Image (tube, rainbow, N blue to C red; front, side, top):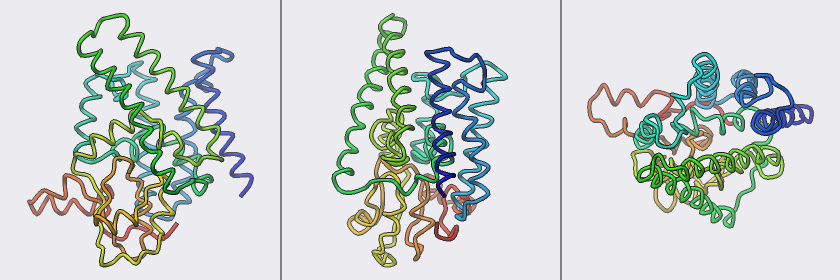
Length: 305
């Protein structure tokens, strides 16, 4: 409905103004119009998304995402005044710990289940989900994200060799300001470019997690015999991944772009797609039983959306 789209876009504007108000302008000194605006939007719209979502997997994912944003990203930092849990602080203990998590479970450990950048797009951005442009040319443009990845790797090198140098701190500050500005600016053009505009082409963390996950355990396994080439998976992918083509060619989807949103898996009419990660390779019976958990999603987990 038109009014829902207007309300959702207003939420994008509110989150963007909150960031710029706190970081640059200082118009209003309030926790409600600050960097916390992003998390506030996710929590409010997350409750709505949980109520209306028909796919069981996506509903559980949005529920976990909303809970983690409310606690991990909002309440804990406000109460402790600490960024200890922020794995986006390059070089921190949590940063490296999360790289291990991504290696084991895929990029979705962040982008699908515990990321504010994706969170606002999966909650307030729901009315714009079908605006995602796709096609072969846009799929080729995914390589643009290696530029942000090169920048984040450059910082890691500087941090490793010159951890206390002033130019290392300056690099980190400029890096953070540039990509935070790009992220919030990208929200304002979502109705034209689709929800994942920043995620697909510009996110340095998504690029890094995608690279780590590419060499890890995570993938979407396909049963080529069950695939009827209906294209439902392609239409549901907001990252523009040509799922059906990859299934026909490789029998799986193992690309750095997959954020594990579960749309392709949960909407496949023949149940040809299944998540796989480190737990799928464990041989013990008790470990194999974990494959029924939502993070794996091997069974039919919801109606079409």
